[in-house]
Length: 411
Image (cartoon, rainbow, N blue to C red; front, top):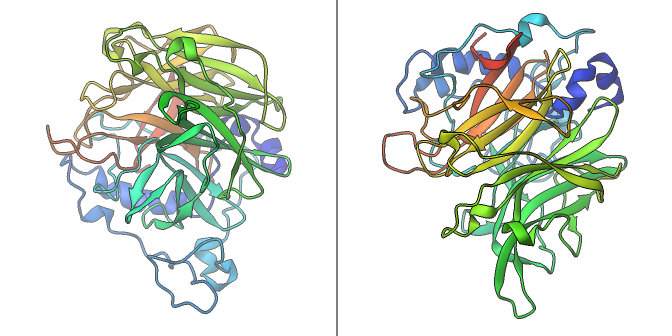
């Protein structure tokens, strides 16, 4: 987030997921139709709005499926759809307190239900005038991408430009890179990711968290030779997420991977630790925010993401249970400080299985230009017991005196 934006809306700096162009208009059109029913199959309401395709690379044909936003000329597109919306001097209270959603269908149905986009993170890139989506490693078009990223002008049509981390560090094995998170720092960006370790003989070991740096948001990132977090005594470490507080302090959250050994039922925990200003080193000591405790969580809590609400209160969104089960869900806890203590907002999931997808989880938060907060997440199955890819889904987040709630996405 720019210094100007942070000064205008201090609480947004903590939210850290900045979006810009046309999200409000595009989502209102799409969501108004998507939430009209509870059928788990995407309906005509999800037909893309008329947004110009990104211009082609110099000398290439304008193919919307292959256009590269890193070489696109923003001036060549319609200014009405590409010019950033002006930010108000204060957040619009209506943007933060929408009417409550229908709990049976609270969000925006996935636009690409047959495409796998787990552990999604979305943010706006000023340099390319595109939304950028990072997701867990996948086999796109026959090519294995370590940290795949996609680009979109409208959050409906996604282009598939490439890999943010084309070269893994020497400690990491191929085929198990996921849960990416990026953080802007002075002079560039830092990427955090999960990967499986290799021993001296090339044998796979536990999963740990690595980090890499780049000059631009989409990379290519250059990884450090050693993991930044690797809890051998807890079965590994996964699911990194970053948080920037109002005072500029930077923090890394993650989950201990105790459940990596299926023979054990040790409780997993969510950790937080302060980062250096450049995001490349951990400072002080890690703190446990909480371990799995409630029945719906089983023995697993994971995928943490922290946000400071409009009244300054801290809210930790997390997932509980096994990711491939209908009981998987998203929980919320209020934290007194960044280092805890944290208390759950109720004894059940904040967002559980519904008509738009079973087993929602792996959420991250982002905001649009009027200050509305949104949740990007991955449901496991959309049509009953049959497992499907984990596509991108979006739900709106509102706030009242009791904390965050699922807001009507069409308002």
